[in-house]
Every structure is written in structure tokens, then in C-alpha cells.
Image (cartoon, rainbow, N blue to C red; front, side, top):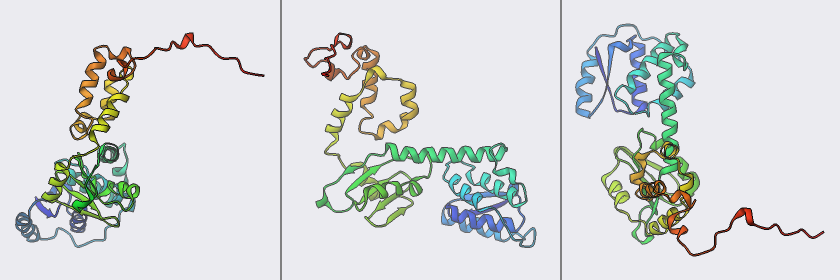
Amino acid sequence: MYSVCFDGSFAGWRDAARIQLRRGRAPHQLSWVQDTQENQDLFGQLDEAQPAMAVDRPVRVPRALIDQLESAARFRCPQRWALLYRILWRVANGDQAAMLAGDVDGSELHARLKAVRREAHHLHAFLRFKPRDAIAGGPELVAWYEPAHDILASASGHFAERLGRQTWLIATPEDGVYWDGEKLHHANPCPLEWQQLAQRTNDCNEAMWLAYYGSTFNPARLNRSVLETNMPVRFWRNLPEGPLIPRLMSQARAGAQADGQAQAVAIQPGKRINADAEKVLPVRQ
């Protein structure tokens, strides 16, 4: 088996995969190694020392396949690169079925593409920026986020389009992006100072947001399974309202659903209006 070492990026994998295709190396002959520079040197020498199995040959695949593989490469799993090469190998050798959802490999490819798209949607929906004091310098907004897949670089342009020239920073355990008002900068791994800035910044408007969220929560419409499907529990710990949600759900199960509104609102003095008893005023002719 040949160990193919690369830098962990899709561009690095694509260049390495092109070489292996031209040498005629089948998927079962390769082990993809994404590691440190020390290991890259070790395994790279081992791979180059092996004789080529075939004369270099041209490789032609549809552009649509390269786009799909690039998106699927953002899916985190132990064998992410092996599947991509297996599909690339099959298509390069005339087996177009590997791109279809009805194929064994194609089905896994499309499942990964769907998961990556959904994770990008989660980033747009559940990321919360915190404002910073302009006097402090640096980004005006910062956010900490923990994505399940490597979607930050490709999906964060969404915020650049909406926030204009306002500067912002998103840090994750793996990588980070910084928008300086004109250009998006991606860093992998994420600098420690970016991570600390995103995690240690306090939101001066958080109390107001929590009061609003709690007062507009409607216990009568609570459906836990739907809530957790649309807002997975793993995101709660990084949302300002996350700690509130279990308490609001508990109150709803304890009888607050009868009021159809938040408990803090329901206890306010006032007169209940019975819709059935309302009189309809006559309309002037």
C-alpha cells in the first residue's frame, strides 16, 4: 500500500490525487495521510521511492464532479479522502454511475453534500456576534462557533454581504475568519488570540435580548421534537438564549401552556378578553 501525504487542503489532495490517477493506482492501493510536516516528509519519501505502475496518462473528469468533491471534502470523518478518490477513480475510468445518488459511493457522496449544506445553514442561523468597544481596536463584532464540518471558509461570505464594511471575526476550535471591511482572511489553525477574543468578549446587550426572548416565548406552541430538529441541542451552549430554553420548556410542561404566553407576561395585571364575547361594531353605510 502506498501512503500519500498532503497538507490537508482540498487543493493539496486534488494535486496528489491527479498524480496517483496518472500512475494508475487504484483506491485500495492508497492510504491518505493528513499530518504534520515531519510526517509529510517521511511518507512523501516512501511514496516517491516506489516505481510508477503505469506511464503517466491524461485524466479527464467533469467539472461538476470536482465541484462536488470539493464540497464533500468539508465533511469531517476518518475516511473523507478515501471516498473522494474512489469516486474520482471510477469516473476517470468511465464509470459515471459513481456520481449518482443511486450508487453505493454516490449515495454516500450526496449524503455528505447534504450534511455540509445543512451545516452552512446552521452557521447562518445560529451564530451570534457580540459587539466590541470601538476604542479597543480590532474587529467590531466577534463570535465563537463550533461547526461539525469544515464550512467556515466557504460559508462565512454570507456575513460579509450583509454587514458591509463593518469588521468582524469568527473563531472556531479549528479555524477562523476575519473580515477587515474589504477582504476575508481565513486562518487554519485559528490563532489563539482570535479564540480568546471571541470567547472572552461580553455582550452588553445580552440582558435585553434574554428579556425579549423570554417574554416572546409561547409555551402553548412548544413542540420539543420540532424545536430540537430546527435548533439542535449542540448549539444551545453557545447561544445567549441557550440556558433559558430548558427552563422555558420545563415551565411549559408544568402548566404554562395554558396561558399561551410567557409566565412573566401572564402574571401581569389586566383583563382577559374573551374573543367569543367581543361585539362587532356596525359599519356605517
